[in-house]
Image 1: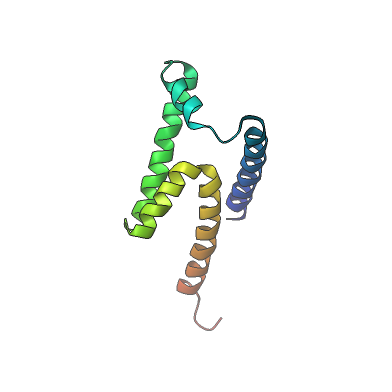
Image 2: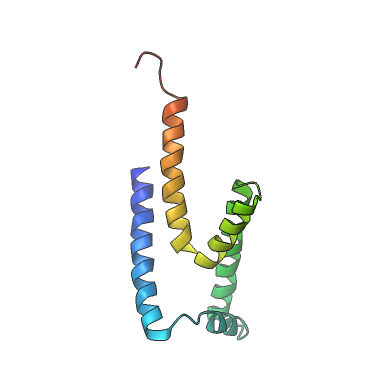
Length: 111
């Protein structure tokens, strides 16, 4: 679990730094360039379409995990729009909660 959390932290720091520089240089306008590339039928467009499908899969999984409750649907939207910035934080929190649950469930009697 430590290696997984370390990787999540690395991704969060890397994408945060990269995003900060990109926003500083180009602003927050990402939708027009993102979808325009898809209309070119180039490798950049193919990557963006593939990435959008990965984002939708992440959003669907997060929503499903929360049983499509209003909170789950809201988290799904944030997962889709936030990408790895959202997912790293979400998985860090969930991994901590999961580890606590496992410790409680598998605690040996007398220890």
